[in-house]
Image (cartoon, rainbow, N blue to C red; front, side, top):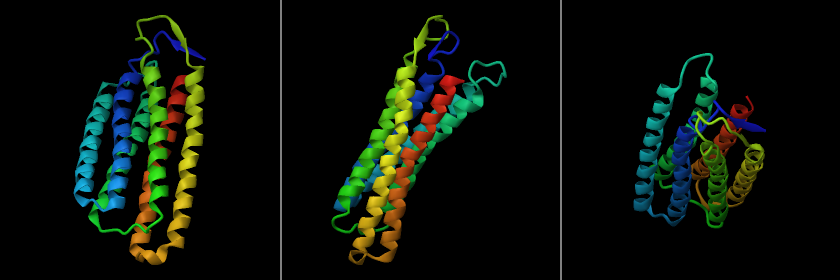
Length: 223
C-alpha cells in the first residue's frame, strides 16, 4: 500500500511526540519495578513523581492535538480516528501513573522468586510500546502534504500487525506471574497478593493500549 500527497507527516508528527511520553513512562516502569523489588522507597517515589510529570506533559500534547485538528468533514484524515489513537496512547501514561502510585502507597510484599517474571513483564511491555514507536516514527518521516510523491507503507502495516503478538506475550506473563504468586501466597499477606495481581494487570494494560493504538494507525493508513 502507498500513501502520500495530501496524507502527509503533519498527522503523525504530533502523534509521535505524544507516544514518546508513553515510551518514556514504560522505561520508568521498568526502573520502578526494580526499585520495588529491592524495597528502595526513596527511588520509587522519585520515579513515581517523574511518571506523573511525564503523564502531565502527555496531556499537554494531547490537548494541543485536539485543538489543532480540523473539524471539517472534508479533512483528509478523520478527526475522530486521530483522537482515538491519542486516547489509547494517553492511557499508556495513565496506567503507568496508576501502577506507580499503587506501588508507593503501601508496603506491599513481593514474595521471593516472583521478581523475575514481573521484571520480564515490564520489559515486554516496554518492548511492545517501542515497536509501536518505531512504526510511528517511520510514519512521521513521510514528507509533508505539499509533496506529491507516494510512499509504500506495507512494511509498517506488517509491523503494526505484529504488535498483537507482542501484546499477547505480556498476557501470558501475567498468567505466569499469577501462578507464581498463588504458589507462594503464604510468603505474603492476602492484600499484598491482590495488589500485586492488580499491578501486573495494570502494567500489562499499557501493552493493551499500544495494541489498540496500533489498530488505530492501521485504520488511519488504510482509510
